[in-house]
Length: 367
Image 1 (cartoon, rainbow, N blue to C red):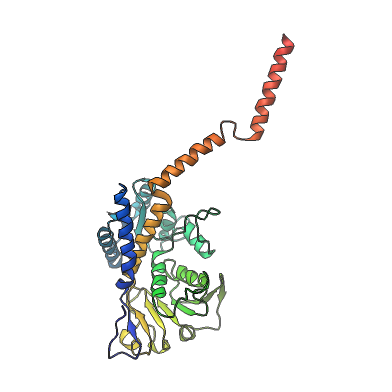
Image 2 (image 1 turned 135 degrees about the vertical axis):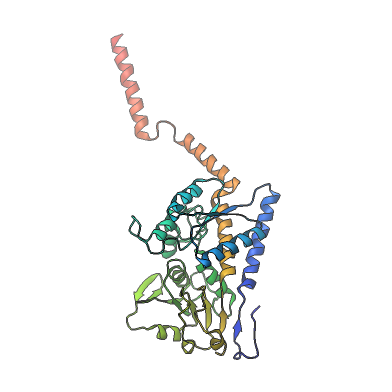
């Protein structure tokens, strides 16, 4: 329920993300209860923490608290030496007891790896797509940027996992008035909307821009030295635009600058704009923007992000780890073995038959 204040401009409101997260978490609890009634243990989420960043530690605490409250098993593995993270990550990937993995970044920051990207990016791509609750590994990022919504083409029975922080913003916008129009077909829910996202990070900014563009919006992605427009699955450079011009024409503005020194100028924001602050720091002057008529302001997304993380875990569990799925996979392998016995293909059958005939003729002639 949005909060209103007599000191704010007419129609201005501040939204508590916890209220948006609540129905998603209730659905998680229902799913966990059904698993328990069927004699199936709740999914296990493993967190890997190898830094002293206060925001990462707080996120780890929130994750554990929320998971335990909703019946999900959660195990935090703290790693003293960052160089050991990859080995711990691979151990978790290979552990059949583990159904989801979250790595709390930053660990190495922008330190390069042998793969040519930053070490943190390398670690993101090392998480198995069967356990990636954050939806940031190459498999899911690649599918997102190509607007592929299933991981098992052409069967299309297993939906992809989406980056949980970016997904939290989508769910918040879906709950806000006039942002999403669900009466339109999939891919057009934000048609006619212009969005500006400040900060093109790989964790939030870039995937969020792709997700909103996939839903039909024109999305300006603003970073330190460049502005791009995401539109209709394509990316366009915007040489004539400025951060101010983008924000002024936008009905939705998302800020994700990870520094306490950044403030978005309030006079850029137009009446009836929805403003979402994703960063752990306040990127806007709350008192000023709530003096803008019709503004909807969401100061934090953390509670919805955790709910989306739990939702992703349940999707991974049903996609890859549920006992019924594992039984189905074993049956497929057994049927495959019957369908493709030792000879493997037609050429091998022909060769075996020909060799048998030649051998029989040879023996017959000797007699």
